[in-house]
Image (tube, rainbow, N blue to C red):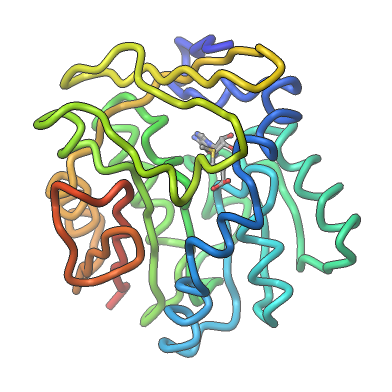
Length: 254
Ligand code: SAM
């Protein structure tokens, strides 16, 4: 676990087959659906989005839920293991995805096409896996390219501001709501959040993350060319900056 590719600086190599198998226990799809309360469906419908690319699909929760709700969803991820899991899960629940593909964010426009989607989603604290400013800038530029003019991007990340300023506490309401799964930062500073996940059977994993500040992500979105950045906290607006666990940043391509 936690092996970083020194050539690319990317962190998705952390998602081993083992971790992918445990991931769904960690995520707790039903709790997640309850916690999100149809937020993404409403957001996408409000902007008349039909075609959606979930570019960090993981095991497929959002891709599959959105496809179930009538959106045309392409699911991609940098990890082959995760894409295979998404395919298995889609098959299991009888949902058709438009396509599934293993794609690193740096190759999004080449592999998914330019001006292709009404919305690009990068959810579940995925963007945190990039450790260099330049890699984050390049990834957002790629996301910008694949969105149609007038379309939107959504980045969802942990509320690291509150963790860095006040220490870690989580209501565990949203993403890491698997029963009996303990998720906590074993190491936390301005440059690194190393989270440990302990499963009820004693299995232990760790993921290294970059603690993204909210304002920084908004500025990155604007630097990539997106406009009208709107932020939600735990799917609501306005929100208490210190209290919420996750931040959803929504921005538009002019
Ligand atoms: N969105 C899913 C969810 O909410 O359940 C998965 C979240 S998981 C925390 C992060 C995902 O981001 C992993 O599946 C990982 O493979 C993917 N990822 C990390 N870096 C990536 C990159 N550079 N390109 C594409 N995917 C990447």
